[in-house]
Image 1 (tube, helix red, strand yellow):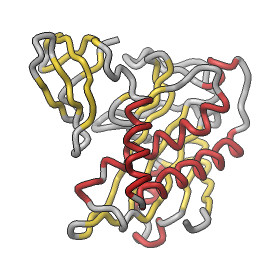
Image 2: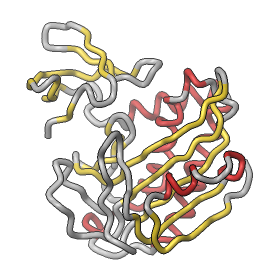
Image 3: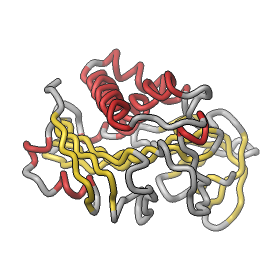
Length: 245
């Protein structure tokens, strides 16, 4: 794995957009982090709220050309595990992965991940991995996700830049595991182990209706495999099912 090089910006619309505007090969092993994002993006049309200078908002460019495009959800499994490797040593409680790749603590959103990848034929190209982690912010708008931050949990400030470097290196190590069959098996196993509501009955919203579902796993395309109380199988893509607290 190439050493990472860091670009620090005081203010930017989006670190993902900034990195994506550079030539593809210049994105590789580049980390762009900003004190303030004016147009931070979440999944789909969602925005990402982050008070200036209090949190980590950054993007990592990784060469994923070794991975088949059909297997790209493996990246969405490896990245949150890398963040958890660091956060497990910081937090007194275990964060979990809320499908597909948010991080939550007791159901409250701690971090969001947005991945934009190029595809070349049947193989992946360069992926830009955008990460927003709530670190020192204490006040949030009343989101449905009820955000939480590291400071809210610990009661003290965390120095941002050392944490950033730890997170980037840990994500890099996890992604490198995808190069081997043994590593892929381990990533899949650990992702399920840390998956929020895995093998638990809970309420969700599907097509505007409240339903009861039991998460049984993730299929090869990264979709959510579930059962209803009658034992019928249902598979959901992103945005087809909403988690109800």
